[in-house]
Length: 174
Image (cartoon, rainbow, N blue to C red; front, side):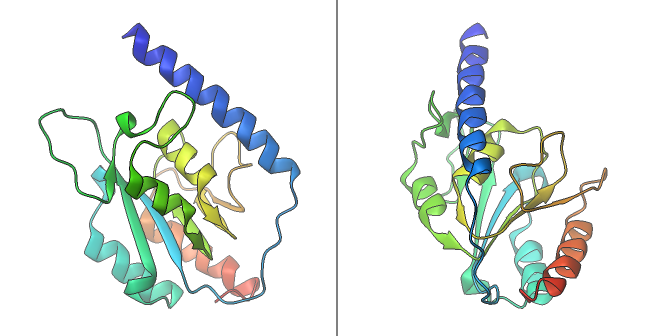
């Protein structure tokens, strides 16, 4: 177990260093409407049909422009799908081991939504590395990761979407 905690500490150091770098950069947000959405979700919350339909309805984005990636607990007997990753998919220094995960973060998104819990280091690393003009997630102790943080202790996907839509309309992104 010490080996695993050492890896996690190293990934945490990488995350903090990269987040500090990104927080001093001034991000340019284009004035275009949202047309491409990246979504990060945990396996326990995952229902692809429901998530995609809600994003289509609330954000007005076509389902072909919604890209979902799912974080799963590691089980060596399980065969993972191309849109799933585990803690084993992330290397010691925050490197991504899966080609599909590398492609996911390389895509440029108009909006990136992290539905996962704020404490999940692996989801935070993916969110940090994602190429997005605007990032949304649940509020945590350190909100430098997101452009918009939503406070909801129940971590309801509907609440996050409703609040995000409200602010995105104000910003004329929808």
